[in-house]
Image (cartoon, rainbow, N blue to C red; front, top):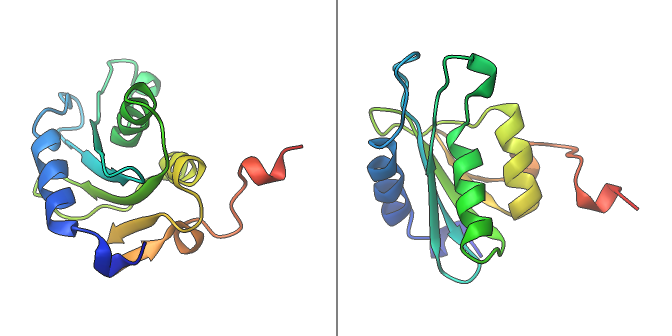
Length: 131
C-alpha cells in the first residue's frame, strides 16, 4: 500500500484518542499509537507505566497485543503520538515490534513524513533470518 492510500488523519485521530487513556503517572509522557491492519482493521495501544520502570509497557506493545488478540494480520501503516498529538518515532524495542508484525514495507508516520520500516530500522533482524 502506498502512503497516499492510507487515511493518515483517521490513524492520527485514533492515536490521539487512545493516548488520552495512557497510564503515565511517573514520566507524565502519555503515548498513543494506532495502526492500519492489512484487513482494514485499526488496532491501538497506549503506554502503561509501572513503579518498577523496567516493567513499563510501551504503547506499541499494547497495540501489537491488540493486533494478535483481535485476529492477527500484518501492520500496514502506523501513527505514534505524544501527549500533544505530535508524531513520535518509536524506541528501538518498538521499532523491532513494528518490523516483526509489519515487515520492511510497513509505513510509519514520522515528523519527516511517512517512511517504510526498512528506513526506520535498516538491516533489521526478523523472521527471515531464522531457520
